[in-house]
Length: 144
Image (tube, rainbow, N blue to C red; front, side, top):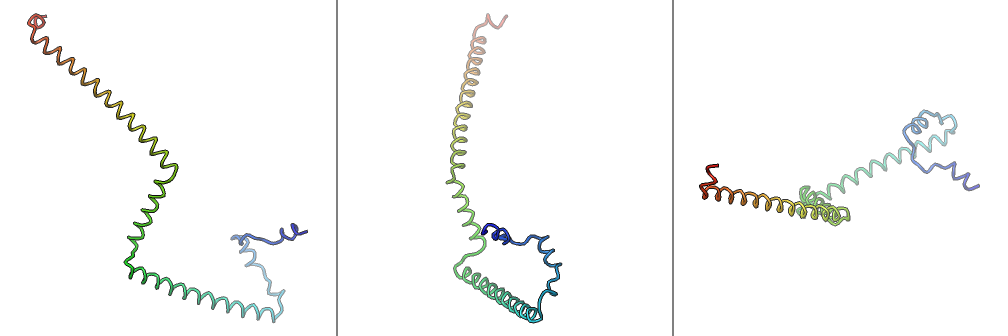
């Protein structure tokens, strides 16, 4: 029985089309004059409360800005702090650590490969240099 009653109560907020349906429905004919007056009074009270809350929020936001100014905090400092914290969070994440380790290892391998290529090229140039010097120093080799 409770599951059936639970199904009748919506726990999700109204969606756009639901709001349109409710807004277009005419419930005024179902209410007595006394109920209408009570609802109108409640509506005025809620609107007043919302206005007051907006004013209080605005005053608190101004006060917050004043305190931050007194403490020397500004938007740039906050952005720097947020960026630093975010960068720290990224660097301490498992994914970053694994990626950094993999790329570091790949970099070491690439460095070793380039070093080997460089050594091989140097050796080839050394051999060619020896051949050229040797052919210059031997007159018989020049006549060929």
